[in-house]
Amino acid sequence: MSGINQISKLLTNSALKSTVWYCRKHSQQIRLLSYVSKEYDEKNSPAPHFFNEKIQNLLLSLTRTDLQKVFQKRTVGSLEDPRFEFLTDKQLKEKLDEIRKVALKHLQFPPAVPVRTPKDKVFSRDPALKGYDTSKFVFTDISFGIKDNDRIIAVRDTDGTLQEADWKTRDRMNQVYFPKTHRQLKVPHLFNDSYFEDVLNNREYVFILDLACQQFEPDDPEYQRIASITYQHINDNNAFDKLRSTRHFGSMTFFLVWNKMIDNLLLDLIDSCYLNEASELIELYYSVHNIQVDNIGNIELIGDFLKNHSNKQAILELAFQATKDFLKKKEETVEGIRKAHGH
Image (cartoon, rainbow, N blue to C red; front, side, top):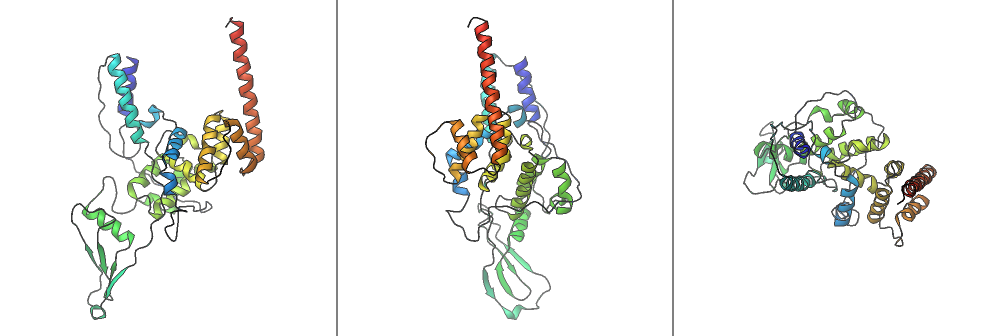
């Protein structure tokens, strides 16, 4: 029955519940870091690194797939009724395997892509139309089967200029004619600077990032602003456990690696005795920044990073040595107990 209860709890907690948050102000002290590129440069773009299979596997390993947390109730979406089933041991095993596969889909990371470039193409200028009307006209191709980014949307200005619609107008018109679930026509006030800080200080990181994913596309400057500030707030407050086993942990980790800010996360892993994950984080860092090292073990890899690339070398070296001493004493204690029992 314990296995059945576990599945029932997972299925129940996978439902999402909508809430509204009201906040007041936001600090301007955090740097705005994003994947901005004036010209799309394959070499300097994060996308080829992010979508690399090796890097995706490292990010997934660092995320830690805790089924209870993956399927816990969220604060956005709709609530569904629970469903109960009686299963044999074989059916229980099959159901758990299915749930693990579903969990991987829930942990699909929001992609790291360059910020979108402005749209300013002018189709024509017709001075004869100047002053014809006091309002702009928006022309939208509403044909089915066209991607939102490829859809033709043009604006006729009051001076007679016919040009491509800017991204803000495009997003609004796409939402009008082809609405996406949970996306609002007007951007929620929650994302405004005057409301943002309270959400961060309450450490509602998953809520704000889930809402940002629903409201914006990954290349939207507003999404990257929200994600950047949230990731840095988590990093500054060492609140990494808030995102573990969620789809945002991998994206946050890649963001920290891309901006060479992994010291706090590395310290958290070392203090928690997750040296294997610490070496995976460094391997991820070296892969993204094309740093070549000899084929060495986990302990040596961590030592190499602390010596040559760390921004907090002294603190990390002390923590690393303390963890190694602790693990060594723990191993000696276990070995002593085994010998005392005749093993």
